[in-house]
Image (cartoon, rainbow over all chains, first blue to last red; front, side, top):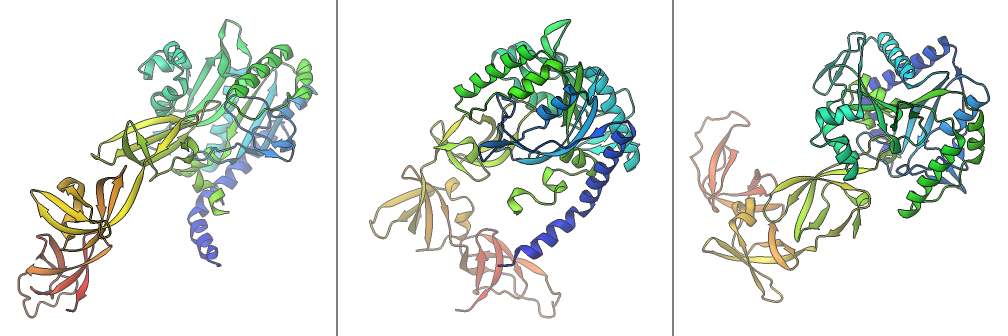
Length: 312
Length: 187
């Protein structure tokens, strides 16, 4: 009945190096933001109303929910005048479990007032190169099939270009056939960030629920994802600051969710009213577990956390 | 019905009329996108494999599979005949369906016959079977190298590696899952 004790020792001893690297990673990221005059914040994990998004399921906690991301509270801080903020926190997503997914995972999120998504990509580059230097990876990172060089410039490729380059169908065809996700996962992601890190950007407008549309081309949202070694690491965008449009998008997402019989969330009214005073800004979320995987050379997310749900 | 969240390695489902077993399974979900389940499936009738990606809204019919204890009777025209000792019902398996099991088959042995919609499609033998060595090179005295092995032929015609001290006419125990020698048996 006490069999779990030797199990823990065996499993955790194998993870020791990765856990050390994970700790140093988090410590160095924290230092990077402190040195760049960011305020570290902590917002509640338990919230009354998550942002309604079509494919993200929150876990309920009493009559409230566990956050799927800290973005609503962080944007309220931004709207209240806190112009450079960052946070490490736990996020929870229902039924997400796989080689790269844990239902409880660690997110780094940061926001900068006055930035757009291109400037945020620059800062993301700066942060990761800084961390790599501190952790002794200035030469690059070993990934699946080789070495990823971190020297600037990194690749920036639009979603449309990526479909032309890697996919058997065009972006428009994939969208019409409702096969965007399948094509992305099967044909595009495995090619991204193989020699050097890659930002995939300018997503079709419906795929950026809280992102600003591009002025020169409103069919795309100013959203990006960072890939290194085929691994999706971060999602960022220029923030939508139009409260009326955000309300409209939330209602559309709620309707889509209702059609699929997903749980109904109340509208996050306090967030929507804060949006009235949100300055032009950009924000990004980085999966810390996956970043730790990358630096530790781990094949799965299980290797960089002390305990998986199955071990509890 | 199974839902996509039930998918896991080893699950057996019915697709296009055939039974399939999931040999590989991967959960993926691109940022803000939907959950996708990338699977490699093996057809349990012909062994063919293919990959397919499912969505979280997909549902799956469980394959109607069950096992039944039956006794081996004889082989005729490349087919292996088994009988249910309670109902006297008889079924036949092909060489292909027998797979490795034919190497360890002895008269009257009881085996689990795998049925798909009441049709026999496969077999699993007891984990351990005792078989007689019918052909073996004699043991050269003085050959004391520990761990040395030699090939011998069993009563089923199967050739297996055994320790050099095993002689013709002796009975040995074989693990049918690995096809490997375990020990000598008396009698």
